[in-house]
Length: 510
Ligand code: FAD
Ligand code: DLZ
Ligand code: SF4
Image 1: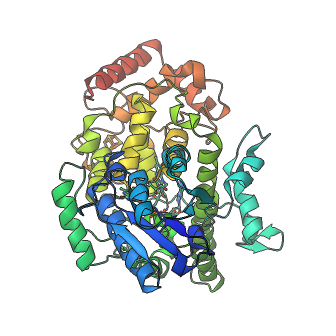
Image 2 (image 1 turned 135 degrees about the horizontal axis):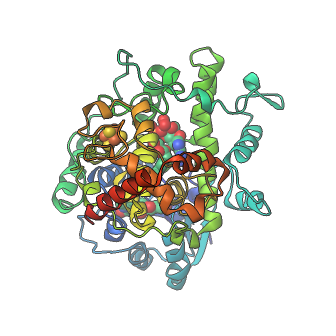
Image 3 (image 1 turned 180 degrees about the vertical axis):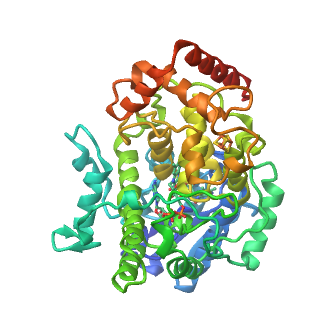
C-alpha cells in the first residue's frame, strides 16, 4: 500500500515546486495549511504583514486545489480553535492517519525546535526536506565558513557568481569588476523622474482578510489602509515586470538615496514575494541579467541587484543557520536601553526618523538604507538592546522572517555579533543623512551643528557612540579616521558633546 503523507505548508512556503510536495502522490497526500494565533502573535506583526501572509496563503491554497491537491485549510476566524501547528497536525491525523509528516525546512529556529520537540511525539515519521529555493544549502554555507577567520560577503558573493554563472565572462566577471558598489551611491537630483510604484487592487479574498485583520488585530501596529501588495504569483510577476521596465535602469545609481517625496524610489519592492515563494530568486536574477545583455539596463544596476540576492540574501541566511541559536543573544557592545516608544508611532521631531518610521508604519516597507542608516543607526548610536531592535524589525516589515531579518539587524545594523557579518559598525552622523537625502531641509535641527540646543542629535550621538565604545572599537582599522577626528577635539568640546548625548538619551522613553 502507498504511504500516506501529511504535507505541512508554512506561510512562507507558497511555491508550487516546494520540496515538501516533490514526489508525493495527490491521492495519498493531505496538504495542511493553517492561519494560527501563535504565528500571528510571536511578535507584534504589522497589520499589512498579516494581511499579506494570510491572503497569499488563501490564494495559494486555491491554486493547489486547482492543481488537484487535497488541501485542508484552516482560517484564523474559523471554528478550529488551534493555537499552533502541533495542534493543527494532531487534529488532521485523526481524520487522515498519515505515515509521514512532511515539511520543508522552516525559516525560523523557533519552528525548527517545535518540529523536533513537539511534532516528533505525534506518531508518524517526520520528514524535513531541504528548502531548495536557495542557491547555497545550509550545510554548504557552514562548510564554506568553517576555518575562515573572516566571513567576507564579498568572497561568498564571488563564489556564488561563479556557481550560477551570472554576469560571468568565462572565469571573469563581466566588465572586469566583481562589485560596482561605488557606483551605487548617487543622491537624488530634485528633478529626476521616479516611476510610480506598482500596486495591486485587493480582490474579494484580500478584502475579506483586510476586514478580519482590522477587527481581530486592531491593536497591532501599522496601517491596514491602501493595501497594495501582490498576493499571487501572477501579481508578483507583474510587480517584478514593472520594476524591470521602469526602475531597474536607475536602481544602481540611486540604491542608497533617500527622499521624503518618494518612498520606493527605484527599488524593486519584491522582497515579500521572494521570501514567501511567489517569485524565485535565481529566476529574477537571470531576468535582470538578460535586461543587461539586451542593453536595457546598465551593468551597475544589474550587478547591484544580483549582488543583493545571490550575495547578501544567501549570505545572511547562511550566517543565521550556521550561528543559531546563540546568534540571537549576541550583544557585543553591551547595549541595553529600551527601544524608544516613537518607533511604534513615528512621533519624533528628528525628521529622518519621522519619515522612515512613518513610512514603515504606513507601508510595512522601507528600503535598505532607511533600515540601515536611519532606524538602525539611531538604535545603534543610542545603545538600544539588540533583541528589542530585532523584534521591531521582525514585526514591522512585510518581508520579515527571522532567517533574513536577524542577521541584518543583529549583525549588519547593530554590530551586536562583534563584526562577524560586517567589518565595522554602520554608524553615521547627520552628515551622511544630509548627503543621501532631503530630510534635513525639513528638520527642526541643524545638521551642521555638533552641539547646542538645535544641533542635529545624530551628530553628538555619533561622537558619544565612539567615546562610549572606545575600548571595543578603537583598534578597528576602519574606524581609525573617526577616532583620530574625535581625538582632535579639545576636552571641553568633547565633554560638552558627551554630556548632551547622555542627557538626550536619558530623555528617550521606553
Ligand atoms: P531592493 O533594494 O530592490 O533589492 C532587491 C532584492 O535584494 C530584495 O528584494 C531582497 O530580496 C534582496 N536584498 C537586498 N538587500 C538585502 C539584504 N541585506 N539581505 C537580504 N536580502 C537583501 N530583507 C528582507 O527580505 N527581510 C527582512 O526582514 C529584512 N530586514 C532587514 C533589517 C535591517 C536592519 C536591514 C538593514 C535590512 C533588512 N533587510 C531585510 C534587507 C533589505 O533592507 C530588504 O531586503 C530590502 O529593503 C527589500 O526591499 P526591495 O525588495 O525593494 O529591495
Ligand atoms: C509570519 C506568519 C504569520 C503572521 N502567520 C502565519 C500563519 O498563520 N501560518 C503560517 O503557516 N505561517 C505564518 N507566518 C509565517 C511563519 O510564522 C514563519 O515565519 C515561517 O513559516 C518561517 O519559515
Ligand atoms: Fe535627521 Fe539630523 Fe537631518 Fe534632522 S538634521 S533630518 S535629525 S540627520
